[in-house]
Length: 333
Ligand code: DGY
Image (cartoon, rainbow, N blue to C red):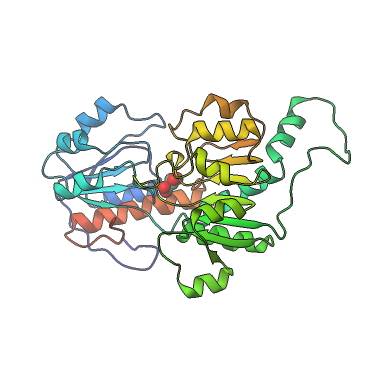
């Protein structure tokens, strides 16, 4: 198999099963099948947990989607010959990485290939929230009479406003580049300062989170979900934001305390929000569903055909590398 960056992987056929927990694009599945016995869950429905626990028995590799929980119960059910868990996502909070490590199971993810798609979606949410596009669409679809007027669904422009990026990794940087094209200024907060070249390119200023929240017109979240970032944005942080500001989340739902967000939106202490991810996905807090000032999408960050193909191919490449005794290109640190 040749990877998108031109490397050729040596594949050693064996009888170990690769269990795939959801539907994958055909090329990735074929690449796996060329070297291994593959057991894919071929349905858009979630694989029932019992079924998954049964199927993983004896597997040497698991290709998992973000909807699957890879925990000790699953790892124990798989058994000691399991070598790799290849998550088809850049985020890997659904995988108990320390438990995998303890068992000598490699964990891989799919960075890079979904950066543009996710940054596009973050920018779309910035525009949807600040220009009230969801409200506009709902109005037209409702069949209610409407006409152009000086005051119909007035939003806020982006030119000259500040985007505060929380987590200036690949996706954060790609979102910031897009925002620059809309005339926005960039501030960021992250654990460590960004590369000077990146900072110069984006004209970005690093701020402590509290200051970023207090000064941004739009706050866009791009940090991974870890114990440290769970509820990073809660009541206290939302209270720091401007009443004219928007919060956009394309990272992971639990980074935001949804209850506190509903309260802030209800009180009008922030202007609106654009969400692609939820605290208890796919459940959406009922308070959010009632609010017109929030745009709600069903976790579409990486949902383009080419991105999903590339993600699956990455995962397959990682599996093939590990099962042929090599180093996978995308081990999770
Ligand atoms: C990721 O890769 O982490 C995305 O959320 C999956 O769409």
